[in-house]
Amino acid sequence: MYRIAPSILSANFAKLGEEITNVIDAGADIIHFDVMDNHYVPNLTIGPLICEAIRPLTDAVIDVHLMVEPVDRIIPDFAKAGANIISFHPEASRHIDRTIGLIKDEGCKAGMVFNPGTPLHYLDHVLDKLDLVLIMSVNPGFGGQKFIPEALTKLTAVRKRINASGKDIMLEIDGGVKVDNIAEIARAGADTFVAGSAIYNAGKDSDPHRYDSVISALRAELNKV
Image (cartoon, rainbow, N blue to C red; front, side):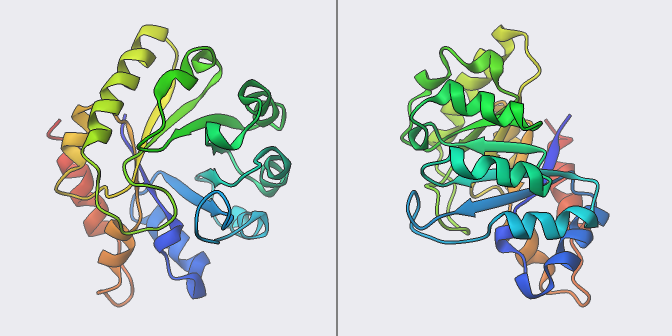
């Protein structure tokens, strides 16, 4: 099963509620929620108040990607705001197992995120506790970047680990995902695809904004895998 997860980082924030409703109506599965703190990454985005505001608009999964350091303090706030999945970077946690436990205790699924230069050994003792592994195919902090091909190798390695574990763990990719590369990414092992500018920028040319054509094109490519 493949999942399309538009990143609202690329949405029109003046019409955020409408933007979220439109992508879900167009066939998206998950809302990807990028949180940046201008500390762990050189950008500042949105917090739990926005998550709380959009929660009543959709029953879709809200997938919160925390690019913040330290990370533990903010986790309960996003859980209370309606997040379903909360993912964090291992470099942002002093005690990775404790952070995973905190996310689970708050009633959310737990994910771990790997930057292009982050080694996979962080998975060695906690993979069985995770619900999601997110591979970054760009360096975090900004939308609209080009896909880093080495991410395919990392995806393949994580897919082998997940399959060997026998666990039902989502394998997500984030950064530079487009119609012309999503099939190759899926072949490397990803099952969940974050796409920001590829979806939202495509819809900006239509009036009203329509996202069904690009989401259909992404799915058509996935059907070839």
